[in-house]
Image (cartoon, rainbow over all chains, first blue to last red):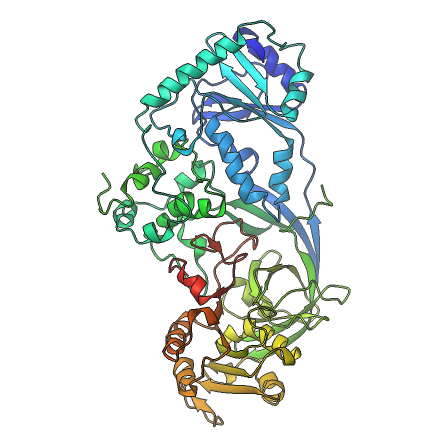
Length: 347
Length: 278
């Protein structure tokens, strides 16, 4: 356990930023956002960032390769480079879990090396949530915000941040800045952290979504929910805007497109969304004709299909971003509550 | 980094032969720039072909794996990429990656069986690979029946090969049909599902493999069931939109199965366990 008092936090950030690129959440006009640390940057007090931390490993757009063509000949140019090491400070327990969810998709054979490269070079400072919000339901998925995973786990109190390295990568980084943030030998670390954990656990129990359960869902429930009458009313007002998929830390669908830049062709990858009609459209047909099918796909994937392929793990982490961002106030919580209840109401 | 194998980065393929098969289907022969087969595959597997600047698409490999010199793709003109492919001349380079998907179980469930292949239109393309594999290892299979139908005589894919090679093989029985009467055609006229029922195959020790438009599959399947076929002895191969080919981009799933990696080959009893969304 190491300790840095809040008045020396800048010193700590400067020391880490001296070793690798450091990103911290800062307040912006569009809410909290991860930004590269610069002297004077103030860490946001917001519970979570507007966009999730998946951007670090699975950016919204990235070049995959380039082509040069001459006559009938093609040259493929591999644009991949070894990434630089970087650290993200202040990742919440939900977003840390989202990396596990993404790992199972991107690192399963054959591994996506673009993603893998970033994962190998990223160090995660997770931060326990002392004030979970009303939209939080990570506990539903077995995530404990009092005990986040990560390379270095941090707890913030009124006057200090306590940190504990949990992986070799984390330990190496902390050792490299030990002159700034020393071991908290014989200090108040353990009792302060335990007190924090206690507070968080108590608050979690009182959250409005504390009783939301995954019991009725799981990998073997396709037949049970696919033709549920509730899909109709639940999806009726969906605009197909895709906001839920873009703010979602576990949504990983992507498109691959080519762009002719005039002096060469770039093949890039960008986020895509199962909520869009184009997503599955073929010249030969369209398997998901209406928004109902697209809407159903998104939630069946999170609650049934993903668990079927991943040892029962759900592909929602309860971060609550879709609850606060959906323009029609539809969300996975309403879906979970209404499915299998034999009704068409979505109250 | 650069020596790490990235599944999305393709190899170069060169088109060394183009055959105009029907008014809207061409068959392209592809090798690497040094004249070799790009990679080995199994019957029923697919490859991603692309035209840089236009896009990438998944196509079934129509040549048999027993052909060790090149691969062939029979492609119908119906979109941006396919239109560009149709405009190519011999010598044009494209990109190729693969193979993708689960093949037909030619050495397992199919071994020793009487084979019934049923195809409609460009649906013959994926089956040609299996048919020629079975013809190559002829003694491993029993009687082979091929029911193939198209809109017209001109729309029959691989017609010369069917007539000159398949139909003259011992114990290979070809049954062709076209949708409407046509001058110069004295063969069967009518839709594939009805023709299959008319031919009336027995189910004994037989495997049926179907590929074609969804409506043909639906009625042929019903017809075969009437003839007494079990879902466990019938196979098909599916097609959905794909981008990655490796089960990650998220769009080709039917329920929890990804057509690109768990398919494209499915047995009908396996399909029954999936939601009806393909």
